[in-house]
Length: 476
Image (cartoon, rainbow, N blue to C red):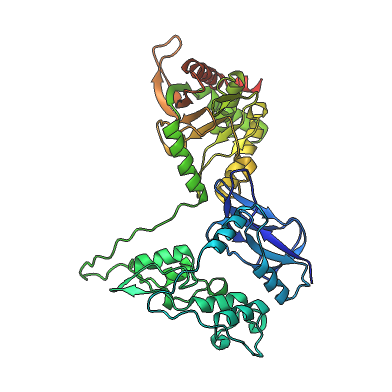
């Protein structure tokens, strides 16, 4: 027997119980080397890149990309050194058991404990076991299942190498015909009726599409969202000139929460309900900062943004005000000597807050490089767990969208978040003259009153204002 390895759902962090395979980078039959990117796995907080720890070949992908969440320890794929037979791989998959004590093991035990459901009214009882004598190529486990379930393999088209009938082919044959209709309305098919993704089922049910008539293009004939959408009539084409207007169904485009949006929604709801927010507002003259930024970018050869300077100034102010540079854990306040500043980023998968570690010790070119790298990763969905975990403070800037000012929700367990609005030219009191125009940036500090007092928050803002209005201090 060749060296067969199970690739199971990994565990990142104590709270992780399940994950979703977002995308496979290799197909069945492909070989990979140590360090290659195997797949992307989406958890509650992040999408993680999984790299190979050894050289191997992909023999079986058990869980396709883009499906439902799988528990930690669940079998996702089978790798080997290329020497195992197809029968050995089939047997390995059929006999695989999750590691003892794992989440997947607990779910398997629950499945085994469930009594078999009674036959649906109008359907026949389970066929008797049969003996299959055939010259067709079929895996041992597939043959065993077909004999136990009384499946006639004559009509099964094998999807394995050389037309070999696999365990999954027999399972597909057992699922039978597709969706049922009642009074002209297609209902969401049962899981066992057709081999389709959950999203494909939902779209089919909404638009009255019979999944039995849809040909799946996914792995082993699985029906995907793309297959269902291809069967929908084109109702968006413009009507011919002079033709009477005909209303069409204004159906919503339903997009279920992905993992990141789920956890963001849950955490922000809890934060707004449980954290006693109060707000401190201030306006900062940014003219000197803009002038220094222009010169520094030319001298240092970097493209530091105004937000990079705000992150830098916030970090320096936090280092001076450790009573604001805190996290709240239960009834304990954790104060930190260095500032780990999170930057709010609107990624395609929702709001994420990657962290610039020890930003108070970094130069402006280092902060610019760090934030640019984190933003690029966020937009590409490649942030790692270590880049999202923790943080002592957050900067959320919507000024680039023309937002005058706003109140941000604190990102627990942090004690405060700074909301930055758009820079505006305003008439302000000048020195020795009546008034002058200045570039003013409005800022709102949201504070957790359980951990930070009003006076402490106000003193922090005074220091932040002084650093921005006299930015030479940032280079000292």
